Image 1 (tube, rainbow, N blue to C red):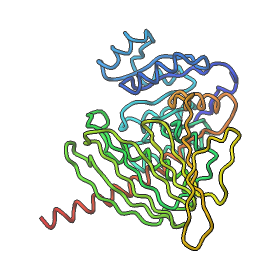
Image 2 (image 1 turned 30 degrees about the vertical axis):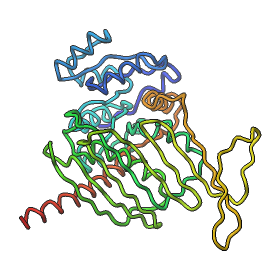
Image 3 (image 1 turned 135 degrees about the vertical axis):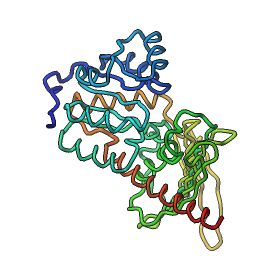
Image 4 (image 1 turned 60 degrees about the vertical axis):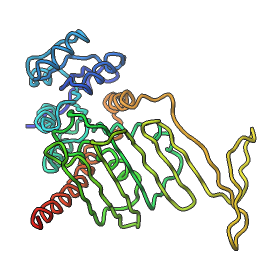
Amino acid sequence: MLQRSTFVLRMAKKVRIGVLGVGHLGRIHLKLLREMTCYDITGFYDPDERNASRAEREFGIRRFESAHALIDNSDAVDIVATTTAHYMLAKEAITKGKHLFVEKPLAATVREAHELMKLVDEARVKAMVGHVERFNPAILALDRKNLRPLFIEVHRLAEFNPRGTDVSVVLDLMIHDLDIILSIVRGNVKRVSASGVAIISATPDIANARIEFDNGCVANVTASRVSVKSMRKMRIFQPGAYISIDFLKKKSDVFRLEDKAPVSQNGNVNHLEIELPGQSKKYITYETVNRSDVNAIQTELELFYQSIAHHKAVPVTFEDGYRAMHLAQQILDKINAQLVVKKGIG
């Protein structure tokens, strides 16, 4: 039987939060949570002795002997465990009426993600998915830029790291971009085609997908975890504008086509005057935008607190997490079908 959260009795006070999983990312979460005045850290749990001992030494925070005990003693839980453990940990937290933050991807399978989404609706707890790139300064700076993409090109490349290889590169890396694309495209997915290759791990390490939407937008997305250099770029093309987003440098370049020469108070607007055949003069304006005051992980954890303490909607819902996973699964299905055909030919 689902339990309703009792946190409403302690509104505006600190949230007692427990951290499930203290690997590389989990320790980052622990560090930030410890610095935030809106949280009291109940403790942490990690079944990996090496991870747990290191976190205990580094932070001096209580180590719990089981996930069950940590969940029972917390108002909310921050799930930063391996992807395969997300479902069971999240389900227990939901059924016990605890608020929860779950790192992406929401779960290991679409079926698990769908069930968690339904459980959250029934329990009425605050539940947020950690799609951290939503809070990258390069994305936040575009908040008022009226994005209406018709073509999107994405390259997310990373050097190989065994961490994260419990799932394919689609769920490990590409899902960041799938979530952002779904949040900015005003249309429904109509068609998906994809290909991918497993090079080092047992699942695809490099993948490319073409996503077509019913409003005419097309997204071409490439993700690799076997690159010699890192790259995280998204390029958005729309009528009268081109936006280049660099997630690593945390900045965006915005180019717009204007009918009139730009005017500014300091006379320092970057622009280029052009003449097109049969048309009057046009002006290409250029600006770099960013948000230098933003720590993406800290921002999402602060917004999670706000949703609990002030009954606000979470910015990235379990439905968002499910939609990203559903699209990721469509891509994986296309890759697997392509691999089966290739094996058959061989």
